Image: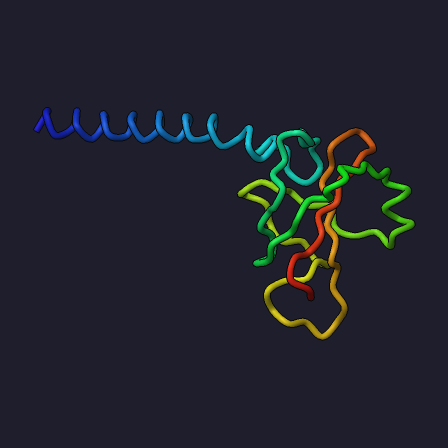
Length: 124
């Protein structure tokens, strides 16, 4: 019996170690995974394409930064979490047809007042 308990504990420790290592390897590739919607993401580490709301979104090739005031001039839009745990906010186009217009641009916060945009791939 004691051997079985040790094996179970060893497996649990191994799973925790693998999980931490996976975060260390994956986190730099998606910016700051734990930054969330309101956090500041590392623009240089953001991927060229993200999956959100069941759709693919491509990062602005010119790497332009926009202020919050400029976002309002463009009609606002959703600020999103580009990480693998990000949720689908209200507003962007999804993989389900909607009776109202949807946004084809989403924004990722990359500075105190700086945002990068990702455009919907494949149309609404």
